[in-house]
Figure 1 (cartoon, rainbow, N blue to C red):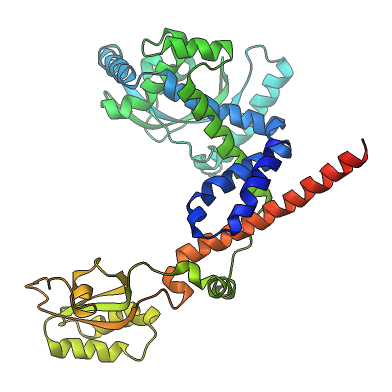
Figure 2 (figure 1 turned 180 degrees about the horizontal axis):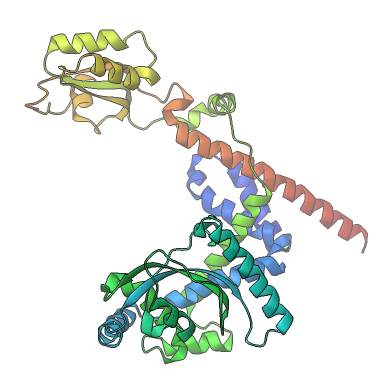
Length: 404
């Protein structure tokens, strides 16, 4: 029996058993999604494998480098950069580029130059430079001495905010704009550049854990913790793929109410609650005015009504807290609604009252436990989706058996 069918037959029936098992459902649903995704072969698709390798690479990178060693290296590089790059300074550049291979054909170079010339004409006609920059691209501080000569030579005569004509470099065709210039930068400002430089050191990086690097280079994992992390990455991505291919409808109020009424017993409380508001103010007269303002309105409108009342009565110093209060969680509610505990003394708000009602057994409305009801409702929807996969699996198994 494959992994999906084993999990499905062992976990699916338990979903309908009472609350003792509910705490483990989220983890088991994830396992079912992963198993179902693997049954569908999504983990073998080139697109998934490429993306998964990229995410796994981040884990490798995180674990292969000693954090303390990297911090020491970056600070050492910064101290060195202060001496080496202080003469020419640091710049922030914004760049429009067409990347080219160093062995690009003349036709490719000509086409790239023609494209950049067209962009330059647009810039000259008033089109924003930002229109040609990739979204979410944030320029970082870079030392002028560390740039290619084709870049640094043009910066010598550039003013802040100006841009160049198109030019060629070993990397391609470019137009650059000088966003900012400084003679020196702080460690925090230089950090992005220093991090990129440290990454390019590769195996020569002194902060690299050579043992893990050797495993990565050999293409196999011997470290148990790393193996677990890599599996978690793959499983998380498979769950995301499953979710994208099985979008769940957004429940409306009626759906949630129906579900709540059908499973009301599952939301019973161990401790009594108070549903209402705690009003703290200056005196009994002010409290009566506030209660009169709220008493004919549904609780969902109390906070907004109180805000409007405060605007109409700016001299009134009062606050309100609306919600569901479990016994033992709010000292005012404990004393005034449940007649237990000590009453706190507040100099600013000497008078306190509550309005609402006690709920001993459980919530009276799904809105009292809305987040939990939504979570449970979605869980049922997911199980129905997985149930369809179960039927498909059984059907395929039957066809396989008949064809033997």
